[in-house]
Image (cartoon, rainbow, N blue to C red; front, top):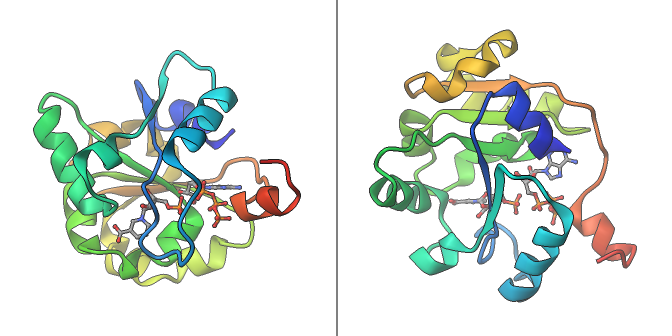
Length: 169
Ligand SMILES: Nc1ncnc2c1ncn2[C@@H]1O[C@H](COP(=O)(O)OP(=O)(O)OP(=O)(O)O)[C@@H](O)[C@H]1O
Ligand SMILES: O=C(O)c1ccc[n+]([C@@H]2O[C@H](COP(=O)([O-])O)[C@@H](O)[C@H]2O)c1
């Protein structure tokens, strides 16, 4: 749902789901890559959405390194980094987070319970000057970094952790 919203709201050509080799801030490692790729591909069927293990192939789980590699590999492409509001709330714990903000436009999708922590976060405060109003979200991909935009999307209070706990995956 947030992928479909992001395609529309940010007027993107494509969205790539980067199936992570493992979030550096999460203590427990994920399920095997092949399994997660297959499950991700079962969920999303959209001509403009690609599910990829490119981070594993590049050999990194750090977003700044991924983005540098992607720009080298696809020099003609203007990339935008997309994430949920929970990730904005702790972005200042990411490796080279200022480099990310300074170099790639960032689109943030609202997430239940995360509005205040995202708004009060260090990243939001430091880069307040670079925030685009949501009504201009469609221009995010064509704007120069630093530039970020928070959009309100229909709230779905689901998390991967909860789905795993309920045995749905
Ligand atoms: N319900 C949601 N609303 C908005 N963004 C979301 C939602 N669920 C996940 N995201 C975003 O989608 C991306 C992938 O999230 P992920 O698959 O790790 O799920 P998660 O629910 O955050 O995981 P976990 O429960 O293990 O913390 C992240 O950027 C996250 O912020
Ligand atoms: O680069 C980092 O330091 C960093 C720290 C935490 C999360 N990330 C990335 O952010 C993405 C979202 O993580 P998650 O677990 O919320 O889906 C995923 O690609 C992670 O690898 C990246």
